[in-house]
Amino acid sequence: MGQTNSRVEPATSAKASPVPHTVPVAEDHSSKPAKCPIDHNPAPKLAECPVDHSSLSPLNQMPTLSQEPAQNQSVRLPTNRTESSIPRDQGLKWEYPSPQQFYNALVRKGWETPEEHVETMVEIHNFLNEEAWEEVLKWERRRNPDDDIQLARFMGKPGQLSPKARLYMFAGWLLPSRFNTEPPFDRHDWIIRRPKTGEEVRYVIDYYSAPPEPDGSPVFSLDVRPAIDNFGSVKDRIAVATEEVWASIRENNKKPPSQ
Image: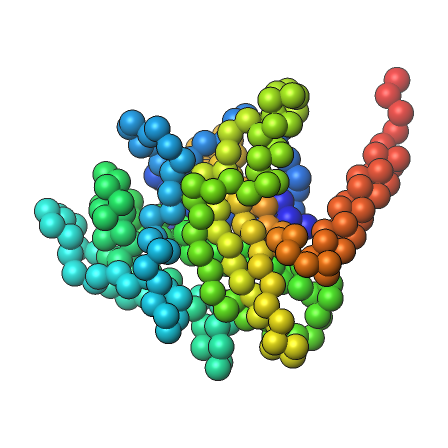
């Protein structure tokens, strides 16, 4: 639980797609150095999530993005928004930005993005967030199997490395053959609400790029875990880490000894 790797296969082929944003769980930072799948030249700082989370609506915590075509835009993009599976409140669910809104966010960030790739980017952006929510639910079901968890609000923090990401980078410096030294290309903080108790819990999500599949399909990795803000989250983190260690030991014991 926590680290999730998968190849991305949306309805539209994602091969060689310049996608900014991640699925079964596998802790693996020993592969080739991760890098943001968008080629920004020059790119002196960490790539940022193209959706500007700093201007969220106080009503729905979503950015206010224009549906009008950007200046010099040559390809007409859909303006329909997709409803997610992620509950918000009062029976409502979060909606993802439309391709046009997504493109406008990219333009505002100053990214030069081929317009024909935007719809694929939106599909993968949505896919990764759905997978992130599934990882959150895995954590929450350990303690609240019958509670209908809600995503109360969220914030993108692409320029702020989490303590765990810093630890992995330090480990990569010490043991480069086993760990990556590249930082995650994005980070989100999600605040979930437990309706039965009204308690709110912060989750941290680090987004990594992994080496692509042999056919060129992009692969991403999610590291999802509750932030260490309270004793309950600390207890959950320790319990899951212990389970993963014992599972690894049992798996190694099943392997026949080398000749």
